[in-house]
Amino acid sequence: MKNKSGFTLIEILVVATIMVLLTAVGVISYSVFLKQSRDVRRKADLGQISAALEIYRSNNDTYPTTGLSQLTAPTVYIQTVPTDPKNPTYTYYYTATASDYTLGAYLENGVTTCVAAQCGGNCNYCLGPYGQK
Image (tube, rainbow, N blue to C red; front, side, top):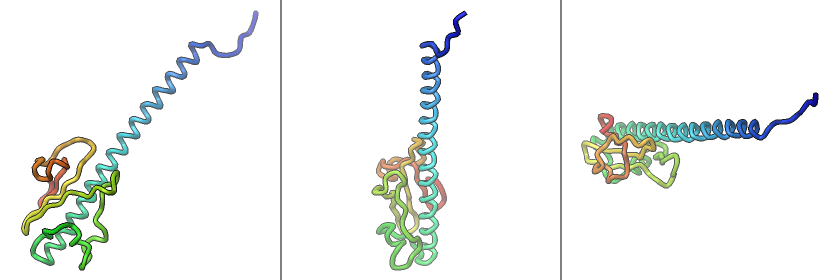
């Protein structure tokens, strides 16, 4: 009786297919995890800006109407205004009146929580002085 050593072509194809499937599942899961983590960071950034806006309002009886740069100078309410974690050149949307403001960001999960007109259609998550808008 002859003893054969080695693998057949079918066995190699089955193993290769399983490895490709496991790799694909891993890459997709990692991609979803990255999107979720960036969305959490965006929400946390808006929360920090919101807290700085409330401190600004308690000191000045109004929200800054000319932009978020008023939060960093001349009095520092926030060290630096955060930017988007995926695209640092993108700044979060901000508009305000003396008694109300809207902060907006684009979340990658695609859930829309704000009216498109609130931020010119460039965001899908909006925050105001009383929470989500």
